[in-house]
Length: 78
Image (cartoon, rainbow, N blue to C red; front, side, top):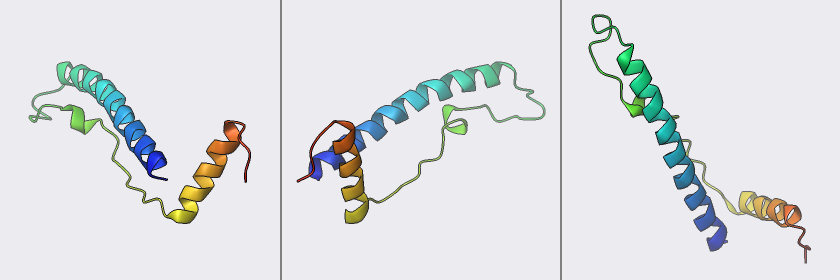
C-alpha cells in the first residue's frame, strides 16, 4: 500500500510539472496579447494551472485501485 501511495504521489508531481509547462506557454501568449488598460496585472502560469483536487484514498478506495491495477497487469487475485 505504501508503494502505491508513493507511485501515486510521484505521478501527481510529474503531471503537475507537465501542467506547468503548458501554463507557462499559455501565460506568455496571453501576456503578449494583454490589453494593459483592461487588465493592468500581468498574467502568470498560476492563472492557467488547474486547481489541485486533494482526494484522500481510504482503505476501500485503495483496495479497489490495487485490484484494477492488478487486473490491468494480468495479475491473479489471491
